[in-house]
Image 1 (cartoon, rainbow over the protein chains, first blue to last red):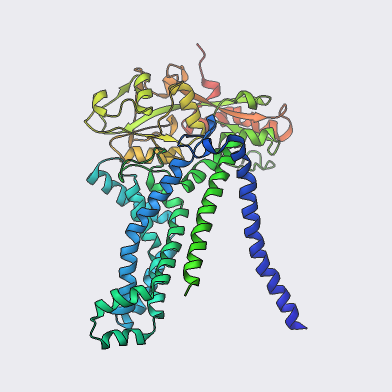
Image 2: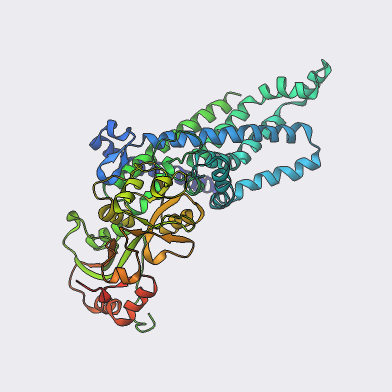
Length: 277
Length: 222
């Protein structure tokens, strides 16, 4: 009797989490989608964003979001993978026990602090070294790259550790060096975990808002180089929601819907890849 | 509210559009706006409490002191892109604007830009403080903020030879100013009247003045 009660209560709580997800989804689409039909897809996917004058083109923001996300991956993947390989294969247990929690601590730093460090250190450095405003794709990519490190490192690390030791022993037995073992055996064996980590990192990068608003400059023009300013979908929502009314507000929800679709797609891909093991 | 302990005022932010909408919807008793009402928003009682100038600011080490209104338009529409063309250093101009929907941006567009569209190449920030911070730290920057918020880290430019000083604002010599309004659905009464009267009293107006605004009672009509 007690068991069934506990089961029902737990089920109810579990369902409430799913219910809130459904409600959020419903709300975003219900608020945003009608505008799409009102203004047409041509207007919505153009590059001219001027919502108070009935131009709702979000293409430059989609491009902006993709640019900083790709930039973050270019910064985050090499460092994250190197870190995970070192921790899993080359370091002593003591080093592992010290370094891993420290890297995971990076995930606990609030994004506004990342943004602040970006403004104070990175932006002036880029402005003085490369010219331009300093508020740029490059600055956002570097900061986001650091922000996604913990995700990439811990998931890749776990998948390296999950590779059975017999693999390594077999590799050493046929005369491979440690480095050869890592590149030719462990990387392919841990591939699905690494890719999942990267995709989850991507999700974090594309969804990050505060740090990006602070250091990307938020110009609407599609950047011509990595030293130009850039506007992402999330920044637009956060920057403009405070003052938005009517169609402008609906357009911001439509941005949210686009973002939602992108992130859901990324997560489905991540689940597919990890599930294939 | 030490003088009127019986009155509780709940304050909510969100910008001029939010203030106007909330008054129209009767979600609040008194709304506030830093821009004039649009045609679609008419029908409210409007009380002018103060006037705020909009200053065009640059980095304090920028040699440029004075721009014509056409030059300001050309900068923000990316027609002029180098300080050299305006007598400054040979560096690119980095204009900083406010986000769509902002009251400050609305006033800037209405009073200075006119029909000229602000370029997509401008950086966008979502507060006076954020714009000021960028200008204070970026030698090539130019932006616009409330006159009352300009501090010693930036330089307010004269436009067409007129500097945005308090005197020039009071005498309306400096033309680029916007109204600060209180909005009501109906004739103020009871607590609402007490609040409005307080804001318009000498004491209330002095508070606005100490915040860098020009009190409504001190504006001199020509």
